[in-house]
Length: 264
Image (cartoon, rainbow, N blue to C red; front, side):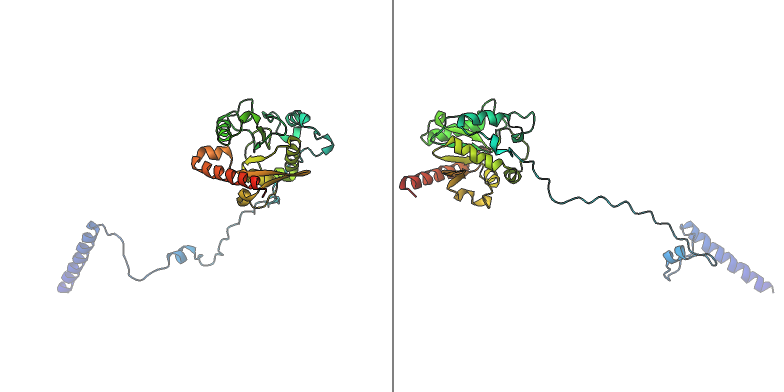
């Protein structure tokens, strides 16, 4: 009996020493190698209790249907009986017709004589234009180009497709609303011998001329009662930013002049 008691005390002392060693090492829990499903242990309901079902939040109200179609541009100068019939009456109408520009926008009239040797057309006034169309940096570039072409800048008719500068115009929408027809009347009344368009993409979209990348290939401008020989180029602001592109404008001008001289 004595021996057995001694052995029990020795075993207990050994176990206590081992546990103390592990506690000193920072291990105070029992670990097993067999994997356990912790999620199942957390979600399994207690015996005799039905599992709790969380209430789902109500669905948000369905938003109203929104059409993917863009809003149509309001008709421009819809009453053609009020359109100007003479060149002299066009500029006053251009500055006062309410549908041509937003209220309060600064409008600039066209400049130059009727039946000019060349009509220069831009999409709209430049940001740095003062009280006269093409009086800023783009105007200085144009004057230099006209002089190089052998034309007197004072003899040129300068016009814009819009009387005022607006942000991000929808040219195709403006054309469908009637601005393209207004431009055709403008060219008819101005009666230039030749037309040079700066802003080929914008004006082509305004006139519904098919793919804009082919605008350089256009050779005429159609108005209400005929055609005018025309060239379609990049806008003047782009030519200011990319001077190297002016060489292409000059070459096309020479080519068109050669075609006009041979009657083609």
